[in-house]
Image 1 (cartoon, rainbow, N blue to C red):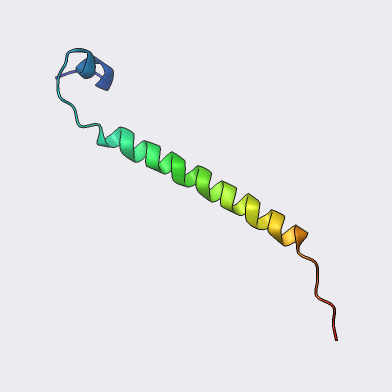
Image 2: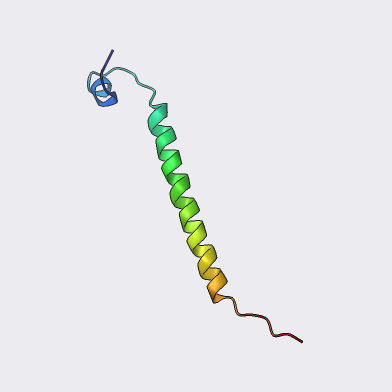
Length: 53
């Protein structure tokens, strides 16, 4: 067994790094959701109130 993922890769052992993939996906979702919230707030501030009849 290898102590780290990097050590296993250096030794040429085949690895399945699903933990790294899950971590990358979680980071992507957090960033995407944050950008979504910022864009939604900007659109709310830019919207002009409709004139009442």
